[in-house]
Image (cartoon, rainbow, N blue to C red; front, side):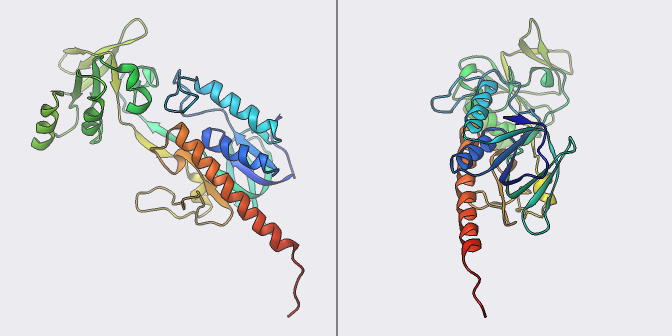
Length: 314
């Protein structure tokens, strides 16, 4: 069932975000016969990608089909899907949390699972945004095999691009690192040269696109280097405003801290997926969601036991 936001209903858990992490948490909790609402505004990070990879039994599946199947499974066990975004989540009087939705709705829950993911901040280079998720990509494990033995380019828009080029070398013997704004050290150049990775100097002007496909990388001096695929290391920004607003502790790396079960420093609040781990792939995020749902249910059981015990005098 999909709604626009139920008012005044208390849930055992409200899951914020319907990606792999959120849906797997919802699935586990719904199967545990918990009252679960999943709030999502339908803007998944991997929407531009045609296929996802590295997920056993789901390799090559379109992300949209994967999410649709996940929603159907969670709903089949009684989870409620709410088409909205959570603007604010506040501790409620008397315990629990109140989630304020952008459609004016309000959800009340004993616990929260925040699985809002992250956003990729891309360099402002013509062609990058337009081709993102197709032949301008980031993850070697997600896309490297599809570009095997092809002409690969790596844009030097981040210090991480140097090792990115080294990783991609195992998928293709033809890897070019475009230095762009990088100040490569002598050691960087020695290591790149040792693996046969060519360094092209000069600023990148654009990713060349023709006939709905990347054809190369254009430089500011007017020259162009033919390439079939381009890899970029984006700046990954967690969508963690809700977690920070609730007072969840942040680690030295700038990301919200959780234990191995996904529990934050705030009682009753769990987090899973890319909102706490930029390296998590779809399969990893699903596992994180399952772990969070498992731990959350145990916490609810403990609370149920405490509530059922008779009050002891004195």
